[in-house]
Length: 248
Ligand code: 13P
Image (cartoon, rainbow, N blue to C red):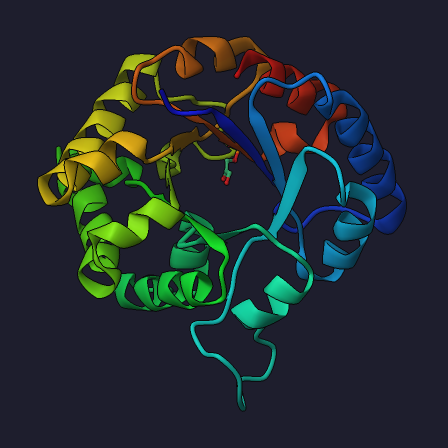
């Protein structure tokens, strides 16, 4: 039986004052959570998240990481730096990184490896665009995104990672995949991992992301291959995020 995980992705939102209120609320409520919970915050707020959440049941992490260990890469942040702030998680390959910052499957695979190397747990995001879904190539797209990482790091690396299925058309649109649509892709992803190592596949947490709200979380999380959620907009509203955590 896999534990559930609900991870908030704050994206480029927050302020020191607003964060403190949100983090404090989450930390207090987390004592009653059955599932694991995490927040992925903008880089400048990692120290604040660490200070607010240390010793609690809530983990924290970042939303991006450099594929390089160190060097002349102005503006980049290495995995070792994230580890210094006791991050447990880091998102890699979020669709906004892929679409807006040109991150290829190869770059995402290198970032995944860099995160593992520093002892972080990468949350690998995969997902198709609306055009890809309509063209009937959802399975091929997410398989390609997953395979790039497996080829580079090996299937056993997924023991130390989390996978997130985030259909691009469902992100921030209010259009959620139906529980069955999400389950179908999750099962496909798990099956693909099982082709390499059945035990790794069985233990792998696969989160769903894309307009998860208090009103649809329970139905999504009830599906056999959906092991929690990656939450954007609703992660910025304490009551919504906590309700989603309780649903898990
Ligand atoms: P929304 O929950 O706002 O749709 O965002 C999902 C997401 O991108 C989480 O990483």
